Length: 366
Image 1 (tube, rainbow, N blue to C red):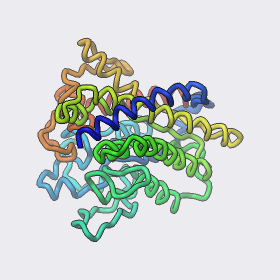
Image 2 (cartoon, rainbow, N blue to C red):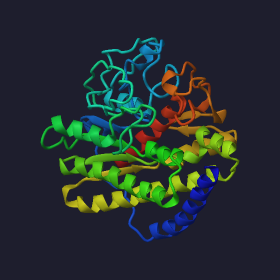
Image 3 (cartoon, helix red, strand yellow):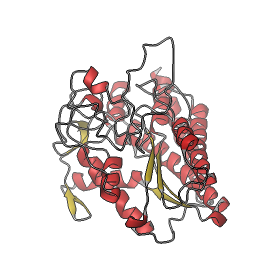
Image 4 (spheres, rainbow, N blue to C red):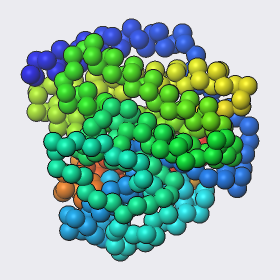
């Protein structure tokens, strides 16, 4: 088994070298767009997984005995980047610490997307229906189902289809749409120990599937779509611990390369969509999460804060999770200057830094 993982990574790295060379010959996405002030952004809609989820499974923490923990995959009393962005740009209230969940005061979450049903597994926890504008659900893959950890998680494709099924025939041109997907697909590939060819196919298929969701929105009239890239999965506690378990110190670097390949393919394919919809004035902002996370880590390792919009973020631990619970949705610790909440999810502090970076890019782009 371990030999299979090592073989997969070695072969993937070899293929990556060839593919990266090909990327340099392909078109990439331009982030130039017509100026629109923040106050002209009429609404926002979010699609994604646990990195964006604002509380889809809103009874989960109550069922697990901690109703004052928000049902989000970050640290206690914290928020995700999507919640911060919606608050800063649209004025959507952030539920105060001490709020008991589920809460009908959550005006952001939309958990109406039909979940994946597997009669051979225990049923998904019930939810209190919410009709907000963030459709993201923890565990979601881009198209494939079941989800990761939360098997019932509706895919990003299903989220987009659910939104479009009730949206106006022609979408609001002043709305802004956000898609962040692919992390769970990559984690599936790593955990499943796919053979090298299958892993390459997974990356190619997943990036195509993300772009298909972008195209589905563009075809209905969406004019501004923000797509976030994958972070460097190789720096997560999940990968660093796996490297120790299998005795392969090169694993984090190899997964870093695979993350880079994923993002390069995604950027290239988004560029093709921009060209296809150019006459429709569809603008796509590709946000480089990979670079944003790496900057936080590099500055922390140098003992320096990362200053975003005048706010300093000095992380004192960028390698270990702060939460004692295995999943951040059940975390009872605050950020405490850590970067990671659990083995893959960011702390509230990291989400805040990311949100400000996203807002800066929107400000420059929008």
